[in-house]
Each structure stands twice: as structure tokens, then as C-alpha cells.
Amino acid sequence: MNVPTVAITGVPDPLPAGLHVLDVREQVEWDHGHIEGALHIPLSELMERVEEVPAEQTLVVCKVGGRSAQATAFLAHQGRDVVNLDGGMLDWEGAGRPMVSETGQPPQVV
Image (tube, rainbow, N blue to C red; front, side, top):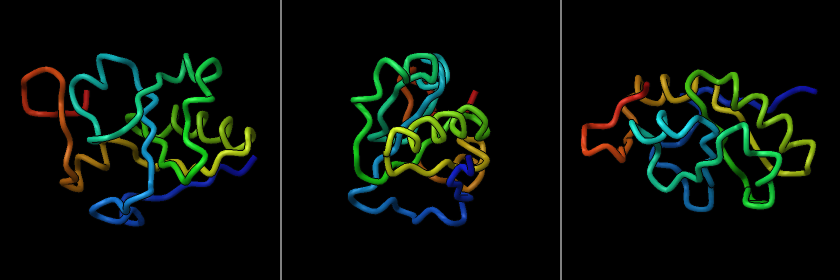
């Protein structure tokens, strides 16, 4: 299956209203830095929690784009309107896009 993919340069800044973000990284990665307002479902839990994923257009992210590509392929097969962020949160951070953290420290991608 061809995974719908977008580079960071193709993602509007700020993100448009109505675009959802799904982060499939592990909890520790999420805690250190994520996109504000993103939905967090680790890839390992996605099959059980697929009903939580919005039906509307959703940008799927992980650290570099590998896990999110798997998630995007799975969700597209489920009929969801999803696109994978190629380069993941490393490219998001590299582009200077805003992040928030849960650690009390400045957000970072780990």
C-alpha cells in the first residue's frame, strides 16, 4: 500500500483548524515534547484504540516517520483520512515548529 506522506515543508504553519494530529510515539517520548493538541496513542495500542482516531484529516507523527508510516497505512486501510509526516518530530523540531512538554523542561524530541 502506498502511504500518503507529507514533508514538513508541506505542512501549514500554524496548523489549520480542523486538522488533527495523532502522535504514535511511546509515553516517554510524548512527555519530553509533542505538538500541542495532538492525540497520543502509542503504536502498540493503536489497533485497540482505533475508534479514538478522528474521521477527519489527521497528520500522523512519530520520531522520524517509520512508526507513523505503519500507523498511517493501518488507519488508511480502516478508511481514515490520514497522512504521514515524513521526518517526524525531528523535522518538526528542526523547522522550529512549536512543541509543549509534560516534564516541566523545555520541549525536546527524544
